[in-house]
Amino acid sequence: MAARLLASSGAVHFVGIGGVGMAGLAWHLHRRGRGVTGTDAVESRVTAWLRTEGVPVRIGHGAVALPQEAEWVIRTPAVGDTNEEVRTARARGIPVLPRGFVLPALLDAYRGIAVAGTHGKTTTSALLLHLMQEAGLGPSGCIGGELDDTGAVARAGSGTWFVAEADESDGTLSRYRPEIGLVTNIEFDHMDHFPDEAAFRACFEQFASATRRLLVVRSDDAVAREIGALAPRLLCLGAEKGADLYIGRVWSDAEGSDFEFAPRGGPVQRLRVPLPGVHNVWNAAAAVGISLECGAAPEALAEALPRFRSVRRRYEIVVDSPRIAVISDYAHHPTEIRAVLDAARRRGRRLVAIYQPHRYTRTRTLAGEFPSSFDGLAHLVLAPVYAASEAPVAGGTSRDLMARFDPRRHVPVELAEDLDDAWERALASLRDGDMLLVLGAGDVESLAQRARERWSVAGNKEVGSEAV
Image (tube, rainbow, N blue to C red; front, top):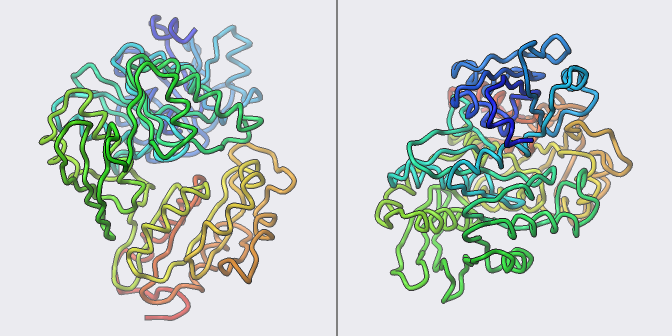
């Protein structure tokens, strides 16, 4: 069905077009000459970007929002069967396809590179796009994050390569057949869709089996390495001598990391990635290794890597002054939170965080892992769970999560009633010189914008409970 959609010339309507994965796909179909329209519940940088690119976007859902000329409908996983546009489309006999059915079919028209994994997909995809572009390979791409301040989430190049962030959240990862695949890591997630870890793993197994040329995995991820054996060719990224893609010594600081890198049989280079945290060394090394496989020159990659600009909300520096620093990050899984805190601690500041849990199912399943992931904070404020279309489940609320914190072993934590309350509680905890971390995958990012506005003139406003 997805192949038929791409082969046709009919108009396509996107329900939930403001989601980054949806927006990139809509943009590419628009560039291919298709009539594209879309709706979303709220205005955003992404919807504004789509309009500047010529894609009509309407804010607000409803039956009247579905254009009469629409012949296809694509919906985000967050949009259910009760959505009026979806119901109206089906009543008219219009096919309704999930986003995750169409992007893999689009990738088939190119030499596809699919970046999969529980953590690091967006950053690694953006690194790949940047490196391959700077190396003259002219890649196109579609990723799950904003590449710049305009809200852009996709790129079109003159070459034959296409980089796609391959989402596993709804199981559609199994539909990809890329020439080159990458699995950054595998850790159980998306409990709203997968009944257990075995089902989650099976999705990655299908992805590995369908990869047509080679798959790249980390050698220290035992599950990914086992799954990699299903691919026609496996490249292991590792710190051990003899690894296919070798990472040697690492020198990290608050602004980024230098690291030794060498493909098997090749000379060792010292590279610089301007992203803090050892996890970003692995992301960068994977992107370099794949770029080499695609024909990029090592010298071009060494020059391009330090010029990389991070994706929005991936350790995004919102405010940086002697009196206050603010970092906004999409982290919503214990492993991701630990990585952000590891990078933040390198700045030597006292750390305060606002965290908005994402989905009740994830919060309930990983509740025992969350408290220790915040080690190193001076204070934590828990906002209510961002539901992401889920109904509340027993054991999955922020109050349930707070009960898992032991005051003898874990960071001081308090529960907020809403985001406004979370903001006020964090302000009361801040001191001159602190760093505030705004963490979560929901609308908590609005507090990062509030911080930007409050402290846009460094040093002219009070920081928190202690006026300066």
